[in-house]
Picture 1 (cartoon, one colour):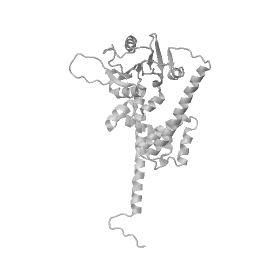
Picture 2 (cartoon, one colour; picture 1 turned 90 degrees about the vertical axis):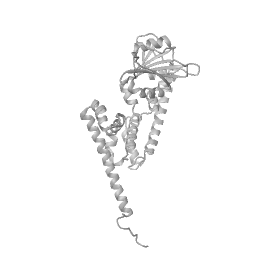
Picture 3 (spheres, rainbow, N blue to C red; picture 1 turned 45 degrees about the vertical axis):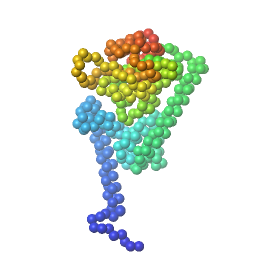
Picture 4 (cartoon, one colour; picture 1 turned 120 degrees about the vertical axis):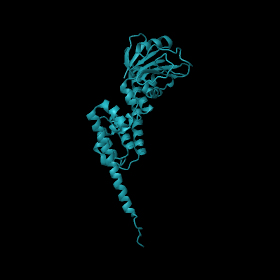
Amino acid sequence: MMNEIIPLNQLSLEEHINRIRDCLERTRQSIFETVISIKECKEQLGDEVFQKDVSEMLGMSPSTLNRWLSIGNSEFILSHQSDLPHTFTSLYNITQLEKRYLEYYPKDGHQRLEKLIEKGDITLTSQNTDISEILKKIDDKIKVRKKKEREKNILSLGDGVVVKETKTTSIDDLISENKKFRSFIINLPNELIKRWGDEGVSELDIMDEFPLHELRTPSVSEDVMCLMVVPMNKIDVGIKVLTSFGFTYRDTYIPSHSSSNLQRFTKENVVVRGERGFSGNPPSDEISSSKTNDLVSWVTTNLPSPYCLVFDDTDVDGWVCLTK
């Protein structure tokens, strides 16, 4: 066999492979150096500076910055750096996998994740599609478990367990009682705006975490309406959450002004309206304000019962207040 002749200034196959491997190793090290730097930045400067100033100076959206932070906060990832893929998307999906495993296996979630490495299900060369497939499997298990828990609660009611009627209750109690509502008000808290607004959180994730869609009356013969209070600069999050709860976004109530000039709204609260079914225009084009009492008064006057107030409370008769 003739020896391979390598032209001058060209590398052999083995030299190319070694060169690429060196580059990949430097890339891996750089990824984790970035992760640790971002984590230390957040710890030393605090959340407010981190979310606003750091994000702006790096030219990076807060959601992307928080994904980097999720990787840095992952005990599993930092303990197994040499065993895991070194792409940003794969590492972020592993943080989501870690959360699901700890939820489904609270006693030994991390040990089970380590088993995935031992079996070769997760390796240094795993593609994002490989991680997504494992993530889907654990998501399916979580959905089955939650479904069985709800079925068990409903069966227990049939066996004579009496649930007291209360003004304020939880979503699990309402689902187990098979309660249904036709009109909703949602005062979305900042904590959920931040978490559910993350690009890594899908509408299906929100449905699984907080299945409000199970409390709607059927919309075949009746329209179901939802009003949600969010800051103007988070209106995209409001629409995303509305959709996850099974409502179609229709329109938005904003603070009125007499000037014909265009005004920029940022942190002012607005009310987005979603609907299940279609009744045409809402019964009124004006609501006094985005305050809970004014919204409750408007809905009580203009919309059909039963009424449900989510993430807030009221003393008005006929309303069920739903906590997290």
